[in-house]
Length: 195
Length: 195
DNA sequence: GTCTATAGGCAGATAGAC
DNA sequence: GTCTATCTGCCTATAGAC
Figure 1 (cartoon, each protein chain N blue to C red):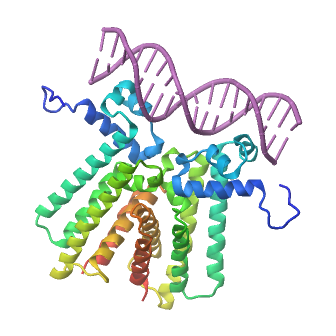
Figure 2 (figure 1 turned 90 degrees about the horizontal axis):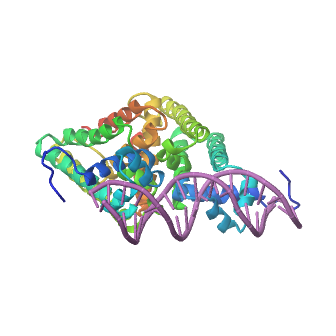
């Protein structure tokens, strides 16, 4: 990887990921091709294969970067020092920001296509959800102890409800052309968990 | 359409729908081809095109049949005369039955691929969710009035939470290889709505 | 790193015989 | 209704020049 002279030019590899990420989040992994990226970026398909030899390599890089950024965002929420309820709201807002760009959660989209994915991509998708669940579990447990959150059952079970609700709300909001639907569901979810 | 001599033989058109339905629910609309159906059914691709000239025709027929059966199932729940809470549990069980066959909700899968679908298929998908929401709204409102269900906000908002939760739980359960995850989320959802 | 050119395969779809 | 044969186009991927 070569560092350009200007600090803010992205590098072709990164720009490929940027375009491909949007395509997968909108059309799915099976719904885009190298030709789509080629057209949007103005470089040939052959050049794309130089950076990502096979489509599966590109797909894996996509998930890895997405999961890394997600983990970073969760770390920022943690270091904010906010109460558990606010950290939970911050988590939901991460989903809201993606949807406001007209996109589905990358891993939610890939979850639908799971059975058609190459093995390494499958593993990366499941890891994403496991990491999410672990973070939520921690927040929920802390919120229960400090009295800012309340829920029945284990923190793990509640974490699964949160993930299901947010992913499902994103999934349905786009076809219904109703982004507010997501905000409404997320608000109901948070209200039900707030003490 | 010709009626066979034996009452229980399905007809090629129906058998095509049966196979295609499974393929879409497992692999997605963009994840299967006429060749897949051809192989599973032992007839040529050309024969498939006789029954469904274009893939979009097949896709539309798939949603229409699925939505019709879903509506029938909801009608059966209604005529059971059960209380609102039990009817809600029956609704969740419709999803559970699909997942136990290793499948995603047909329209949940198509919701993910929405941006790549032909217009008529898009409209059919949104209609499915609207019909579901209207039915749930009715049940929730009745449950609130007879005191078997409780929730904050409008019945419409609560209905959206139910759909989001169940679709999302299905979506995530398959990659995680954890069908019990769905049951757990559904149980939590119902518990939160039961008075 | 990016290009032109092309391979090899599979997609959806059609023509016409039976 | 189903078949064989074929078309056209797009897909992922590679070879080799620049």
